Length: 600
Image (spheres, rainbow, N blue to C red):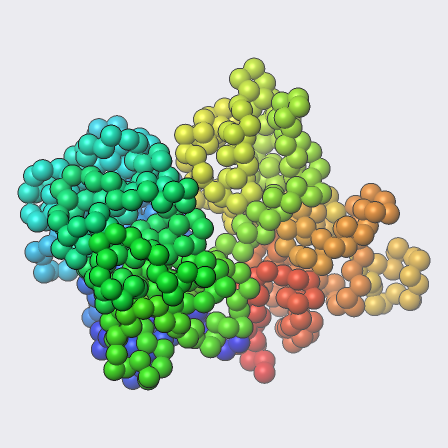
């Protein structure tokens, strides 16, 4: 592996050369970015200009803009980013605490998208105070190029509009403060379109879609090309939950939980090749299960569960080879991935796609390998060593992980959660999702659980899964398992345990991170219940210690007395031998060691 960056982009050749590796870049073909450490990217969000925002850490952001230096921002330490939305030269940042923050070109309209400001400032992130003053908890956000929409207190839809042409259900030309939008049912998801032309949302009925806004290509999917200034029923998808809707200037694309892909609007960009004013299943993708969607002004990218990338729309934006230079792609066409990717794909959610008005991005998502491993462990329910819950409704869990995340003992948790004021099973499962893989599926239930445990909600940026597990590595007292490694200095006597050195470890870490150790535990448990297991790889104890530390920290760092050449040599086959899921990140760490010590 020769690359240290996994972020690729495509767009107009001159406009985005500021963020590519080479001065004479080959855009609009996929071109490697010069942004480093892209395996930590959580999300990329593009606005209408030549700029984009990169969310890497729980409360930190990086901003890239043509002819400007990279800018960095940090929210208060007790705030954790939940989502980011973009409009016309404006970004809204939603945090887990239900607060909204704004990053924009102008101070004047800091709480709404901008249309007429030319001076670029983006000087700092500012809080949007309206929601706190009104005691509104913001659950989700969406933005177009003239409006911002907010779901508050679980199901109430609010909007702020700065576009005189887009009176999105409000009935006024310009609204500087968010106002409630009347909807008969509870709103659950809101989806945005470009230039304020299209807004769609779902209610408590997950297969029913509403839409409103500008509609001159029929991109709302309501069966006509008339503008809709109040929420209008679009379509009933008959048992299929709507996952997401995304709109360009003249088209909309929708995907369902079954991976079906529908399009409507302008024929050049809707994937159908013909104009449609209702959402219609795209024939070319009928046999594919689509799991991701990214829409720009006049094109669309979709990713299937087999890591196949398809695109259609205007020619300058993502053609993979010269043969596409002279034509637009009106129907989905398979797009060649960068060759670097093909060696590092083994699950549907490792590629992430993003799109803005003028640029599209591809990046590999290895940031959540730890949480994915622990999620698999949680769902398997194997090798759990204790239970929590009420009698008859106990849920098996891994004791060390629970205590690591909460800093409480299992007995304390059991007494606080299942004593006099016992929480129900649904609330328990919500709590365990946060414990095992940092998912906040129900904010209200999780906050109630935290209050019962006398923990601060929302969790601070120092209480993330990654930091908690890294800190656990230092807790030798709670390590409940040992790996026996042959001591090469001793005589070869397989029966003498004194000939082995021991590496203490938490059993659940081995189970979560390594397929080999899971298989070994299966075998050992059939024979007896032991707290030791022997490693038969013939690797040095130093290499094994480094590998075990990597399981906790996702990084490899050598001390002065360790032999880098030996470590790299012995761990070069660790991904395959130990059956690790995070091949890219592990090999990247080895590459750093090679470069640091100038190893060939």
